[in-house]
Amino acid sequence: MRKLVESIQIMTKFAREMGNRNKLLVDFGFPQKKSCSIKGKEMTLLNSLFYMTVIDSVSFLDEYQQVFGVKTEKNYKNRIIVTKSINKPLISKVLDWKDLREFRNNLLAHNMRKGKNGDFVFSISNLDYNAPRNLNDLFLLSNLVQFSTATIHSEFRDEIEAFDSKTMKEIKPNERLLSKEDVSDITVKLLNEANKIKVRNNRTYDFKLEESIDWNKI
Image (cartoon, rainbow, N blue to C red; front, side, top):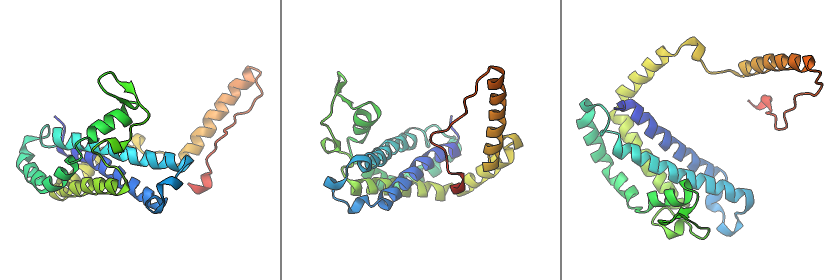
């Protein structure tokens, strides 16, 4: 049985990612661009943001419908029933996209294969499915998921805060996140060790990083 807050965290992750992708779509000006003008790298970026939002929406629904309140602690059952009743208009609208899961499966998650034989297809697009077709559809989908998640957070605010507080106290010192300085120190140490081994084996080539990070921007 999954813990209530763990289930909420999973749904929150999907909702947050969907919202952030919407912001990126707006930041890159896609809503103002004509489809015929979007090509090359821009098209790749647009497709990536669009399709990943669809994938996350199905994952959110899986957690919401099959785990949250179904496989979480029974003592929260009544509150989850109320929460889901509040969210019903929002989730029902998401479910109006009858082919959302099929679209995710056939085009996005399963290598563009469709049909019982798994035939590979090039011509099928989201226009062939009852699923989000344009950015406005995508924004609506994302909004509905985010508002549904906001309801959950409002209902279980105390449980979430208690869980977060307990989790922070349980983190051990050696489990802390790496800092910028840690990355530098570890890298230098390991490269020095590797260089000593190169010398012992009469190798003179240098370590090179073709795509190096500009650490001044971090």
